[in-house]
Length: 524
Image (cartoon, rainbow, N blue to C red; front, side, top):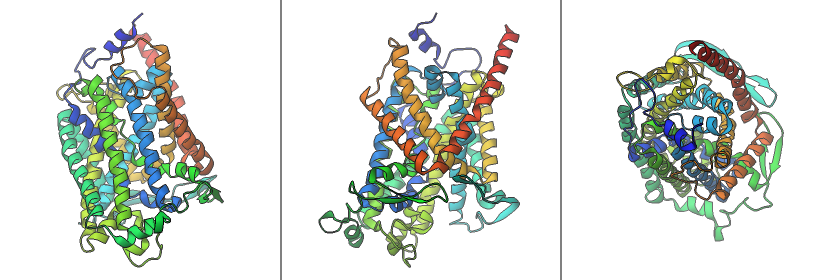
């Protein structure tokens, strides 16, 4: 029987036969992977919906405080698991080792089906749409091959369909990005990481520039007065314990009046999703130098940087535009944050500051941001499928490394193919809506796994221990479970479909695990 220490040693990246992953990523590359995977297009869009639902400057910022607190606690807790099991697969491995192989597979299944590939598809198509700002022929309405339109199909609290299938110039540009980043990452982890470093630094500087502009030359006295008011009266508007906020239940359900705490949970759909993907660095632990030190440190540094930056960006928006707005307003200022055109709050802020070319600046910033996000998630995601295939729970070829580049080339290709299918189908946006809840459930389960491993393997080496254990990890479970409960009640269109997608993986797991057992028996 192996000891916990021996088991951890067997997880080293250089164990086993055949080509092995190369530990070539340092702390800087690991941190840029965290930052680059987190920052996509969300921070430039989701604030509009948060502003409409909270209808309060105080709650608007509080939503980001809640998100930042939850995300940072979760990331610091993951650091212990990353230091214990520094191998390719990250969260898949943590769930497999703590709760069992079924839970690890369900996470990997959902990651491949929607979470990773759907996000890559969404940010790549967003890249194409914003490319259209500079080249108008690149558009989601410029069809090269329109296959079909799937009408909206009401189904209980949700609506399925309402999407166009085919190739237009916008998603063709997105597919080109999908293929390019897959090719770069097949050529070697150094190539992918180098590209990630460049684009992460560029997007961080762009976001920092937006914040600086908002606090300096874009600072608008009228907007600040509207958001703060005399004696801070406007700032605290609708933020008391007795304030009620209208929330529509489901897609076409009744309007429910909920308190401030509940509405803060409801708006986490947008803010938590914007802060997601920080765990991608754990997928690449097998290729990070000194992973027991650098993976936990990169999680703390990267997540800390992003949550502070997001809060400052949202504050900067309120320096330039009033929170409350008129949906029929004739100007950017009168529409406010709540009703920025097409919910593009970042573009609205820059247009307010630079009326003639602000839109071009924001388009360029989002293109840089989405490209870097797509590259980081492409690099990381294939490592999970590689780990699953090594366990016999994914296509066998995906569990092999390229003999020359020592990258999971087959996994990168399979990931790119499925992402392309999602781009062409137009289903990625709807699928991402469905899976946000499921992703949060997997975070909860992984933190539960932290407690389980403390009990099952008390003597296992833990170079880094979860900050604030057991209080802060337990607080995360309570907060995340509360958000899940609220979403189940008030936003069923985001919950039940995601759970169904996860549960569809159970028969797939049974089929694959039986095949793996049969193969083992045949080889024994």
